[in-house]
Image (cartoon, rainbow, N blue to C red):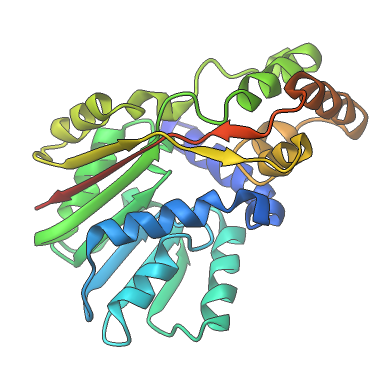
Length: 269
């Protein structure tokens, strides 16, 4: 299995496992930042939108509302369980202009210039070759169309992130990660460089410092269960996992907020 296939399998496994907690109220940031990404696009009625790495619809559902019944949204994710969550929410909202599908953003096969807008929120960094991914998204965008790539800024989920990996390292050092993939583009400079290498110039990039409140440290564990951390969690037996959780929360102490810095970008073709 090549590097790309391994990365895809790892991401799909982590987020399929996380699906049971992905939409928990403590993780409301998925949908908050997704909606704000869509607001930055200024979508118009009747436009066609592609949302890749769509999760359970944090940006795809607001996009469908924005383009109206004459518009169309195609929402794609590798994790079929998240896709099913999105489909259920679309039906509940009566949105008939959105198609959720399980798929790979690098192999969708749409012709050049197929979409008025393309959205990728918290996803492009899972691909080992982000430049190739950005080029593929740009190819499918019509002239005058807009590409929105939203990613995490520095220090994501701190101090809980460091506490989590310290707790993991004490029990299962084999599961430790060397780096977080989004760190490659966690600053406006890094994101602009990556987009530039893909031939995408003059993107409007905005970095915002944000915190996400915790009602209690236990909220953090629910966030971990509904996010990419689940990939590591799913590989730990119940007895060991209980120790990891206890250590993680003990290290957090009375923490009442975690860092959720964010970087938005919108480029016009």
